Length: 286
Image (cartoon, rainbow, N blue to C red; front, side):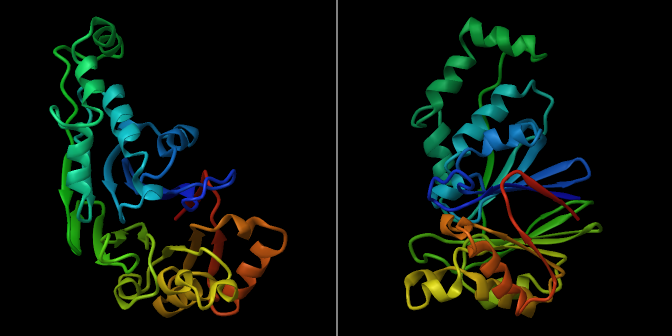
């Protein structure tokens, strides 16, 4: 099992990190969690074909977690030749509505693209040249708004969701836990410390947790109230007894001289397990 850290950043367009997206490979299955800025390009940089992704899970619908969704769907569909597995998309409220608004044949913002490609000879030739057959199928997505609980259960793995606490009531947020014989991984998404995420994370092998700032720098601000910074991330990992903590969603200022070292030092003073400072295009074997 391998974790690909595609996007480890925030909504700030930074040269080192931008947005959130993670892929977990389990045997021949590739599961993607969130689809933030330039995710499709980062998949290519990581040598992962969009057609290999058969499951996509959204934690919430801030743009830094979902803005590359149309690009990913169009790329996956355009590269498909007809024998790929159906893409299954899960997420909190709005996931179905966003998909409809993007790709519905009559009202979708990007419907013009796939409609042209299933009709024009140029696109049909490209499709058959890749090994596809005619008539070319329209873009279709198996999408479902979900609530907390067991989401998927296959012979090799299962995914469970729990509520996270971030910007409710304007957006719903979910954290996810993947369990398999190879190990267990929790993706918190954006959240403040809360019992539902802590309980989901109990005894996991790996916790992928946001760490936006050094705790001391944000005390008394909304960022401290609704996100996790260094001390919060450390406490969540420590109380959940996870074996390994991967830090993501770092603000750009944490790359300034001395800030990364300070952040890791603060976390290691509380959490004694292995700490990994997430970098984009890094991968971690489980």
